Image 1 (cartoon, rainbow, N blue to C red):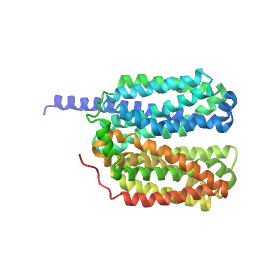
Image 2: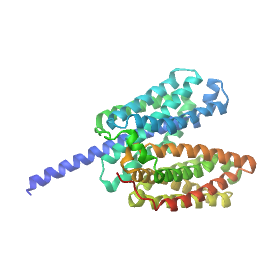
Image 3: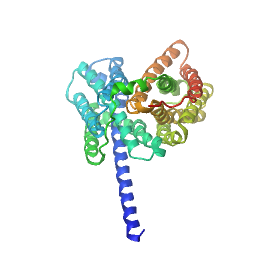
Image 4: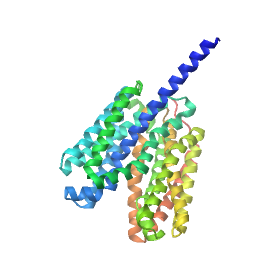
Length: 399
């Protein structure tokens, strides 16, 4: 091989790598925006309730509507578009996101808000499935987990950085101002997707042919495991602030420090979990479930000691979010020929698990004390450990 030929090949490889990184960065940006769109409601619930003249609990249904939209609408839209070019699907999902958030900015009817949030959730679920399919197509097989983690980590960073900044903007500019920023960022992500994300053909098999693989017992078992992991984390995470106030004994600015610790942990976990998934997704799920159980046990037993509570809180975020790429990888792996439809399922079960875990933690607090949130999460996480060990023996589906 001549020097000129080698140099040309190196330049081509470097250009290809740069384009891949740019496409992955665009997918990360888009999921960051989608995460902000979903979670901003939490930080501005009081502002939204006052402006719309509804109770706090009623305003909270805006978050529930988006979660249900993702859990139910995401798989449906993925099934309907399963044979479409994935670049077109991504553009459509971002277009729906822009439209749904414009409804929040420009109108004032609460019923319309709920519908818009449900559509935004469905678009988010659709984007996750298509985005992961595109990300995986851009990298070698041995980097599949890391490609998945790029898409997933956008949501973790949105919780750690985007939501606090958006909440601050909401306090200064009004909550509609924050959602206006979401619309602008979503448009930027849409333009970037048009410019740098390559065309990726949809699967040749229709949704019905793939569904029999997606709903096989082996896949459902791992989805159930994912639901347990997220339910265990949510049983505590939902009531993190009351726990810190009443059990740990911190208040004011210190609570923000603890929340930042948790946010950093979820970001690190979401990316690091991709590397563990590449090394062995089944083992990564066992590690994630076990780490979550130990962390929640530490909070339950030593939550009154601020330093230990901070370390345990970091571990909860690390192991809880770190399980997400492994769950995605394992579900797609076990679904085999149904992999593209299966891409939408982990996000659905995660949202259902979060909803059920929040309910369980709330019931425990109502019956006992705030510390019971960590205890409830611990019980669920122990069940997840057993499920993770049992499911590690499952083998992928065959055509």
